[in-house]
Image 1 (cartoon, rainbow, N blue to C red):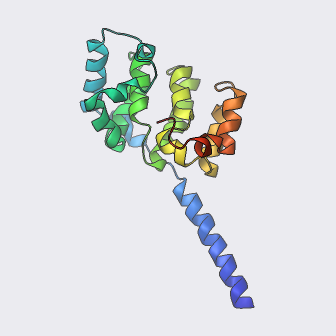
Image 2: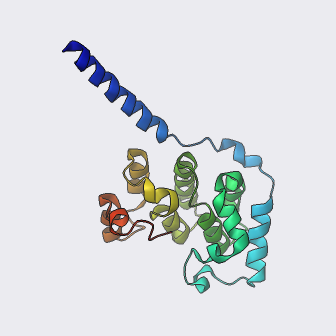
Image 3: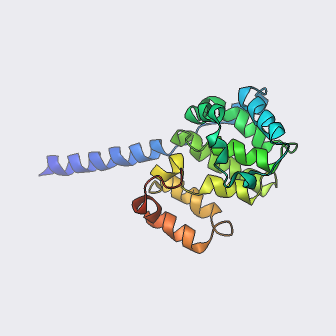
Length: 187
């Protein structure tokens, strides 16, 4: 009987440790000195080619994903994460460029995504990104669609969502309805 009790306790501790480890954000502090690269060039060129058109002209924030070159960035977003953070915090970049950059980062691995949520929080507080960029980070798409249940994701979502999202969207997300009703509908 004792062996079973110890086994259950050990199993519970292992599960708790695994959940804690799964929800550990990456350390993006090394991203401060990242030089502009292919993502930066693509975003600038895309914005220039569209003659500074607003992201809403695409019909949605995800409109950039219809561009073949953008899909290459979206398939391996962690490779371009530091460039994306530098674009997001650059006061010289437009909110349209920041929305497009964020759309390309929606399928980041979980640790990166949690860090993106934290960094977006700080950038929003400092006025470097607007509500549309933060909304794109918060709504369950890509990575976030599969981790709505994770305590580390939920805590960050609950920190940001009030005042940004409608109460119905918050309830739908936290209840899992977004996922259960139509998996993948957001991305």
